[in-house]
Amino acid sequence: MAAGVQAAAPAAMADPLAPARIGDLQCYRPDPVRKTCRSMAGYAFAADGKILNRAEVLLQDAPPVTMTTVTPVTVKDGAVCGPISGIDKAQIAFRGRRIPEADAVPIRAQIQQSMADVLGQEVCTTYRRSGDWWIAEVKLNGVARPDMGDTLMWVPASAGYSVQP
Image (cartoon, rainbow, N blue to C red; front, side, top):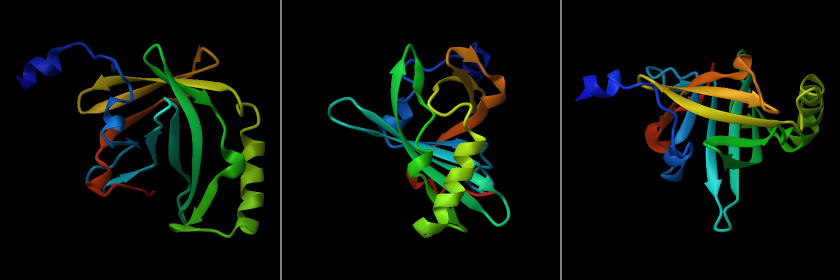
């Protein structure tokens, strides 16, 4: 049976957030041995249909610095879409501990400056199966951006994965 599944053509998810609806998280560039991810995303589903994406991203390897943002998303034509935003309210952590707001302000300003050309633009991501992994394929304002794509695994929140170098 496994051979039959592997032989099937790579398929996109009908509901790209189906695993998130049962609490799984997206682990980007996973290392399953170390249970680490370069970034992780989770989703919250409100009764009114609104969806929020909470993403933690590794900004710096050594010492580890992460940024956590919360942004609204929608599902359109099998893609998860939303504006590149949330930097102005991002939480910044140093070695896993949130830094004081006064220290976070200049870091957020630097990130906003480096991302100025894409902030506010719509990013839509589709997910294509590739063996045990998923390939995130990204479009920015409707234009394919292979440079923004990545590999990921869906992991249970209880699996102990964390954002680390």
